[in-house]
Image 1 (cartoon, rainbow, N blue to C red):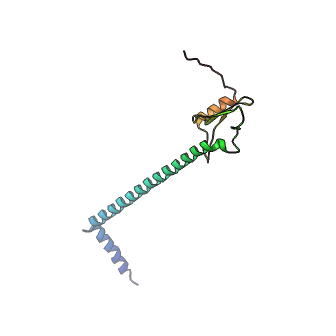
Image 2 (image 1 turned 120 degrees about the horizontal axis):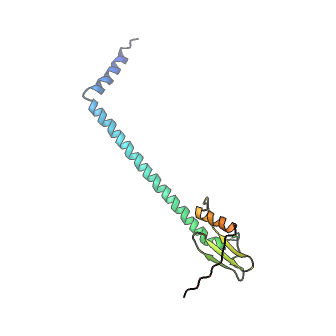
Image 3 (image 1 turned 90 degrees about the vertical axis):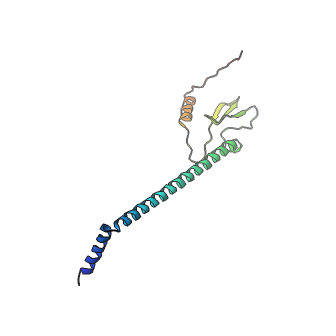
Length: 140
């Protein structure tokens, strides 16, 4: 067996890369690189749009859950009890429930994997520490 055909094939590749076709090969490689980069950028934009849409769906779901929560049987306070009042605030806490017999209850509604914000955690800690005060302000 002769190695001549193998050497000839290798020599042909070298002659193409160093001969007049070298520029054509370089342009072709550059074009492939540009096309791959453009495709990658398009896929990255598509992924960003999908993430944005998913986030929007989660937010809308959370807003719906906040609005419907007082109607659910396992809501932590009885919004229909006589003499009570439940007020929607939205920020930083969703509801404040006033009950003349049991006091004031702050209710934060979360859905899915949502967590308390840093401001909500700080407020919860202040309430649990007893740092809740009454203030009356008269406008003159």
